[in-house]
Image (cartoon, rainbow, N blue to C red; front, side):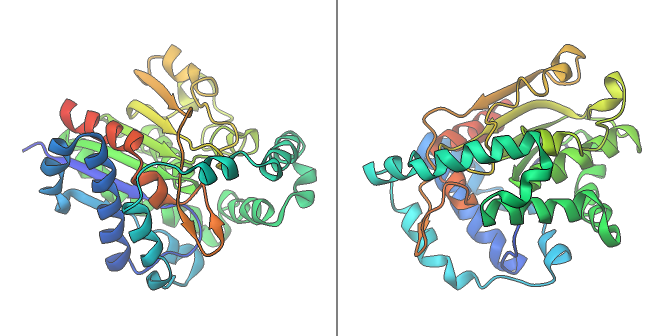
Length: 298
């Protein structure tokens, strides 16, 4: 029997225990769909057992985050609709514009990464551990996702992968390995949010980046949707269509669709606005609409 599956890959940093993290992610996702299409949200709500979290972060960080720190802020964003004037103003503030210039320079000249602001430099260092496969960590992480994908792909299940931030890099590399190292067949929908895949630093280190023609890209993606919020410092190159257009030309994917204009991630905590947090993306009606479209088309 063909079924629908939503698989979620978190971004970097320690996360709460999976049994705590998964329900709050599901709650935020349902709220986003409800804001876009309430009737579809009611249908999706009955399929909670088909929502699967790939909890790779404990392997990488060997620790967990205390969820109670975020719960009041998650409640706040679920009960707040739309960006405030302050949210919009902060997303565009000049500090972030200056950081954007610096990061774009370092993206072309990686030797300058040590000059970047601390959060960005730290992200680059964490990704380096992944790309170097230190202690086989990258392979172990990708295996977690492969275990969730092999049988459903072979059965022809309708799969939506939602990959946040570093999770989008993990998803891409895993799909490449399934495509070309395991010769897996099938197609799925990929929804990347706050993804750094547009950066050259990342692209030059992806699985298959040195391969010719069709072997350079995964062949398991039917639709690829990419969502980026204004002010998200991780997804500086917002549009992935131009970076991965050869996948369309080679017939490997039907479409790569960017949604990056007028999108606001309004997650806010005691440290202020964070345009990159997953909960802010999940409750956004633009994302809810994409999930609803996938649900209706499968």
